Each structure stands twice: as structure tokens, then as C-alpha cells.
Length: 267
Image (cartoon, rainbow, N blue to C red; front, side):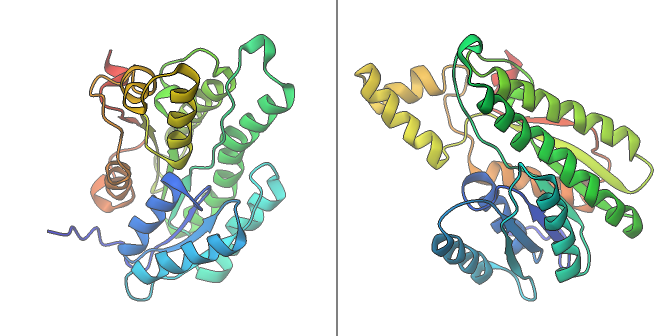
């Protein structure tokens, strides 16, 4: 039976939502009657096709828009938040989801890659939150959900900037939650384990070729080595957590870093 989270008429901005996790979360919100502003890079024709597909699934009166803000540029992030408020009249939900990845030993890590990861994952979360909070304060209610990672709670080799950025997102989440605790705004982080995104699917094929083993063994022994349940996190698992956090049911949850990781961070 479908659950009604009573989100009709709400407005959300989701960064990095033209594919993968962000797109799945946008779809889940639109189906609940939330108007959503998508954001991200990609082929314009595909972005428009995906926007239209989400619009087709959306509940009545929910609108699905797109803004092409570059998450490395603070002024464009400010414009994204302003666009949502101007076009849709309010802002109830901000999901900071944008992310990129690069893997290398710390002493070989390219400077520009470090700067890019910190900018896209951590600094964009600050800039979007900074501009969303005044709108939410004026409304007396808001929900900010930061998509962190299991790598925001535990480390892995060769991912120093990614871990630094995701640990930073968790710390930022907690600080903002304390600061905003009496404003009606909640701030939480979702920390997924491995999700079978298009990026991960590419990595499986590349690892299988490089190691000379089957894709199934790559999943079991490499990708999900740290995840005890040996099962990818599904988009619906993250969507369910998001819907709880942004609804009135989740109003007491704030400052939490919620693991959805098949017991990865329990070990």
C-alpha cells in the first residue's frame, strides 16, 4: 500500500539529480506531489527527456524544472536556490547530492582533482544551504538532507579527498542541525553504502577486465568487500529514508548521520 507523506505542494531542490541517486530521489518526491528543481550536467536532450519522464510520473500539480548551475561556482548555486524560490514560490526541501570521484594515492593525487572534489561535494553543500536557510526560516519549516556516504563515517585507501569531503559533510550537517534546532528546520545526512549507479556499473566492468575475473566476483570480492550483506543499496532504500526525513513523521530527526550500508559501518 502506498504511503502518503503529505508533501503535496512542497518544493525541493536536488543537486546532482540528472542521473543516479539524485534522479531517483527526485522521482520519489515528484510522485508524492513535490515540485522539484533538477540540477546537473549531461547531454541536454537526455536531461530534457529525463525531466519529462519524471514530470509524467509526478502527482497532479507538481512541476519538474531544471537548472544548470555548476556546483563549483558559488554564484550559480545561489542562482539555483533563487530560481526555485522565484519560479515555485517557496522552498521546503534541499537535497545536497552532487558528487564526483577520483581515486589515487595521496602523494600522487592531482591538485586540481582535490580542489574539484572538495568544491563539488563539500563547498557546494555549504553554499546551497546558506542560501536556502533564510527562505526556510521565513517559512518556519524546512528540511535539508545531505547525501554523505559510508565514506563519511569510515575511510578507504586512495580516496583521501572523497573521505575528507564526506566526513566534512557529516560534520557540517551536525553543526547546522544544532544551530537551526529551534527554527523548524531539520538537517540530516544519509550515508549510503555502495549503490549500483551507472558509475559503479562501469567500475565493475573495468575491474573485471583489469583483474581477469568475472563481474560477479568483482561485486562480491572487490566492490562489496566491506559490505557484510553483499548486496547493493537500492534507490528505493534511499528514497524511503528521504521521504521519512522530509515529512512531519521525521521532524524529531535532526543532526543524524543515518547509515544505509548493509552493516558496512557496523563492523
